Length: 270
Image 1 (cartoon, rainbow, N blue to C red):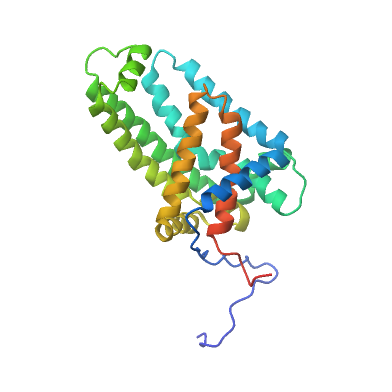
Image 2: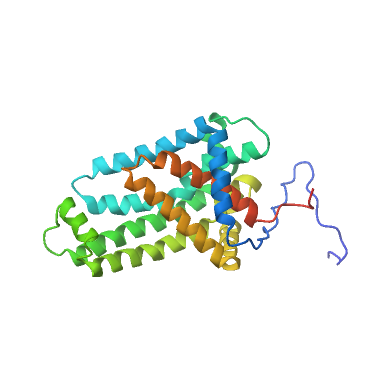
């Protein structure tokens, strides 16, 4: 039987490495998200080519969805808003660019394309969780449309006119209310989860719990962060997805710096 003063087991040849300890979460000031955005913009400027590659990918996906479902805008709304749910997973390459820059490594695109291999199993688990949240949201979105438009759906111009003129406040309240629930779940689970799994080989459950802990310890800061993410993403959408070329890399890089601020470093300082 192990005694109280026994040293912790050390991995040796042929033995698996011990699991990373549960990450500690720090308190951060209310204005920290603005600094994260500034640092993210700095990463974009310093590593423009690989960062903009991911920005064009986001824009291309948005345009493809819009064209593919141009006659069924209710699907476009559900899938486009899914960017906010799946974004933390899709931005893995951007986290790796920021990580490499912080370590003084070259800004290269190729190593970031397969970064998921570093912790494939746990990243896969997290992707499944986000995928389930996204699919349930997509179904809930269509149900809200069906409940408020029981007859023939208005065309896109009429629908946008109703939204801008606030003619259908009940629909808007229901749609954004339901969407807020799913957005909160995805945001709470992913604040630091993917950067943590990439940086420390952390397991998916601990990474998601650390994200929830970061939210609970910093509710005001996380609210500011969420508003900034939504605002920048909407700005990208309102420019016919072209703005996503720049906005998504900034958000992705800023998320890495949010992780570095929120999660305590491993081991003794220095």
